[in-house]
Length: 157
Image (cartoon, rainbow, N blue to C red; front, side):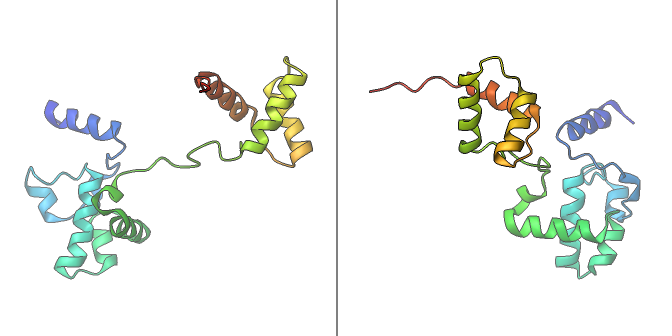
């Protein structure tokens, strides 16, 4: 692998779009030229979708030709239809925010901290489980409290 190729692979990896199995891509145009790069997962997915739409290939045939599964084909197709080319870029997995720490839960935490300034996140998590019937990880509570401390106070007019 040349330095240029390895540098590109490092950038693709950092962006989370490095195809972990470029050897599975069997499309001829990925084998011959320098424009098509089997390591670029976004390009592979786009070409797979284009192959079906404009070349008339079957979905199963295209998925196999580009080294991806049929579910991966359908996911890429839905993402492209929904968001355009940006839909083929990776998304962070899992919850995007502290979705369990609602305003009600944060009020509970603030009240308990006012009553007992030394209370720890683990004890708060147990109390939230008992009082609000909600399982919250102590680390989530710690993160929410750290975020709250970083926020500047609201100025009054």
